[in-house]
Image (cartoon, rainbow, N blue to C red):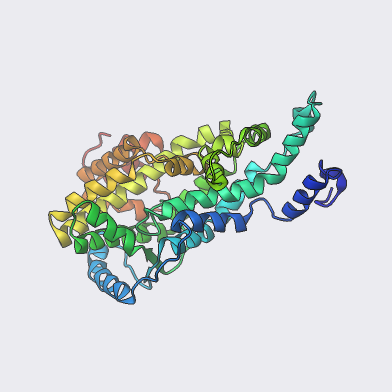
Length: 396
């Protein structure tokens, strides 16, 4: 059955809905125009953005060159062939949509699965059937609006491209948002130059970690498996559409409010496969975030002394604060950067460091299958033993 087949269009006999159907036809599993528009609106508030002063990029590039030898010394991995780029929130949002387009597309395909005929047995209510058809027809646009809104709101507080701890495709760019960095320093009464150095250490360390093939591919594979395993509930979207209230003078705000609960809006139901995968994804994410934090603490202390601890505390407190956009990321991508998860990662890295110092910690980057299992995350000695790393203390 083709997209233009009248049998596939429950509104063919209704002129208004027929026009809507034709307008939405051919948009694919996710409407990227809607995603880009909502991302821009959320990131900029609909206002024009001034370009970043080129002198800021030059200053940040000079600071990055100071960080390079320290990063090599701590991780054993050379940072070469990269380029510091500075962007505005609006540009960050568009770049992030593009970087994660394959992931969001796979999510849309997963959420767009149609129910089997058996699932519709007994449903003869014409109005229910019409609303179900409307929800299926509008799902790509609604998903585009939801993802665009999420990414746009994240852009208003992001420091760089790795605020979402998901690997991007291998490239030479390391992107930072100077306005967000400087605003955060002002709000928390932190030295601006120290704040810039700290963020660069964070971004460059993340870049090194996610440039390691087995880390990038291993974590990416788990996130893809999660987004591909949703069991959609098409009735949820129909119910949301029928209850949407346009109170006040701004219908756009009403639509954006309706995007606050992605599981209801998008009909996303967690599956048994996702529940089974979640502990392994949690363990991998905790270990990677714990490693990055460990390296950042060492290098930042060398470069900015006591300011490093103050900045780390402020940034990490902010990272685990729950917001609607953070919840969106958690539910759709399987990321759960809770205080407990971050603490498990820090404890794991501390346990490895206690046994084998930095050489042991760096095995996370140097071995072919380094990501710990949930049991190994809570027993670092087991992880070192699996990697056949020589242990002075055989206890876990």
